[in-house]
Length: 433
Image (cartoon, rainbow, N blue to C red):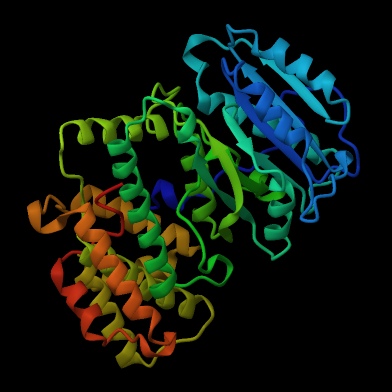
C-alpha cells in the first residue's frame, strides 16, 4: 500500500528549538496567550488593543489581567504600527502586552509566516510554564473582540473541546462603499453557509459541536490548546490561508472542534485585502456579481445532503471498526458496497482505506484528495443551483428533519435516498467553496 502525504503525521514542534522572540517568562497564572499578527494596522490598533485590555467575565467583572497576555507581531510595518501599539500598551499598564517587531525578507513577508511566527512564540512561552490546558488564542489587527471574548473561550474549553472557532461578524456599517445590494448578496452567501452547517448538525451530529453552531474557522477568531498545537506541528508553511491550513491539520487528528456562536468578534469589511482568499476577496466577488445583476450559483442541495449522509456512513463504519463494534458480515458488505458506489471507489479500496486510516479525519482527507485527482466533477448545470433557490430548499429540508426525532431519520428515508440518487459519485468536498 502506498502511504499518501495526508496519512503521514506532522512532526511535533520542539519548543527548545524555536527562536525566541521575547526574553521573559510568562506568569504561572497565565492561561491564555493571545496572538495578533499585524501589518500596517495603525488606525485599528486603539480599538483592537482596548478591547483586549478591558476583558470581563459574564457578570461584567474585569478578568484577572494576570490570566492572559498578548503577543503582537508587527510584520514589515511602514505606518509605525509597532510604536503606536507600544504607546497604547503604556496607557493600559494592566495589559501584559509584548510588541514584537520583525522585518522579514520579501519572500517571507506574508500573513502565513507572521501568524506562524507569533503562534510558535506563544507555544514556546507557554511551554516554559507547562502546557496543560493552556490556550493559544488568535485574532487580527483590524478586529475587535467582544468584551467577554476570553471568558466565552474558557467556557467552551471547559466542555472538553480541543479547538474553538468563534463567530466573525463584519463591521459593515463603517464601510460606506458597501452597497445595499452587495449586502443582500453577502447575506445570502452567509445564509447558505449557516444552513449547510445546520443540515450537518441534523444528519451528521457531533456531541462536541452540536447546534447552534456556525461554519467559520479563521485566524481572526480561533483558539487551540497549546499542547495540541505543538503536537500537530503548528501552523503549516504557507503564504496565505494559514488559518485554514491549520484547521485542516487539526481535523486530520480528530481534534474536538467547537464552532461556537458565543465567541464573537467584529472585523472590518474592507475590500482592499491584505491576502487572497479572505473576506475582502469574497466581498469583491459579490460586489461584482451584484453590480452586474448576476446570479450566484452554489452546489445543488441534493449534493450537499448526499455528501453529509455519506460522511456520516463513513464515520459509522470507521468508528465501528476502531471500537471493535463489527457489523454482521452481510451488513458490513452492504455498507461497503454502498460507500463504494456513492464515492466512486472499488469495494476493496474503500475497505482498505477504512481499515488503515489512523483517524477519521485522515480517512476523509485521503478519500477527498483521491477524488479530486481521479474523478470528474464537471457536472454542468445539474450540479449547480441559484443560491436563493438552494437556501429555500435547505430551509424546508431542515424544518422537515427538525420535526422528526433523530432515531426516525434512517438511511432508508426516501428523501435521503433521493439525494443519494441525484449524483454519482458523490464528492466529499463542496463544489461551491
